[in-house]
Amino acid sequence: MTNQFPPRLSPLLPPEWDAPVLDAVSAFPSGRDFVQKNYQDRSGGARGMNGLGVLLQHPALAKAFLTFNNHVAIASSLSKRIRELLILRISWLRRSEYEFVQHVVVGRNAGLQEAEIERVQLGPNAPGWDSVDSELLRAVDELYADARIQEQTWSRLSEHFSTAQLMDLVFVVGCYDVLAMVFKTFGVQLEPGVEPLNPAVRDRMHAQKAR
Image (cartoon, rainbow, N blue to C red):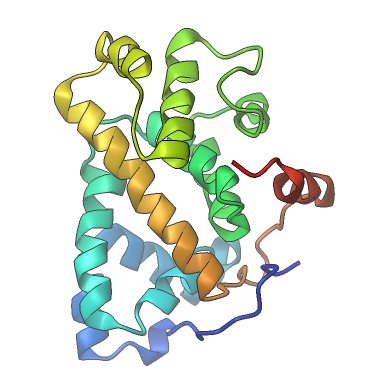
């Protein structure tokens, strides 16, 4: 199953990467190398190829954004597990199928359990979260709803996270909120061989109450 939205921009694939594009992807070396490897051997269904490839239609913009994305995805002061928890929640709220599907795999690799990935869909009040995970998800919901983490949530998170980590939290959510807009607006399609959302999960994503 492809993205529900028709493609508006075609991804630039590695054989088409010229000097400006190669300069742009140098801002996110791990993403570049991951896509190139997957393109060559199709491991993981060439996962991530279309998302990055669409950004590369505008190399100057891509370089600026990928510099930011490299910090968020690689250099952030938050753990990989926490980053993926935040990304999965904002992509679920934004109904960004492409982003959610990609980060289900990344989330598993970062240590999220299947039950946790399913619970992300239910939000911060779902039974089973520990108090910190619940507050992290609540922060995502508040940023999504009002572009602001509310006082009580901020206070509780401040007991566990440094100033740098709290700043990184906001920027992780913001980065992948922007990417959800990119993937949906440009109609980025799942790569061949990438497992789509289970139809029941997909229906639940798109049936969730608008916020």
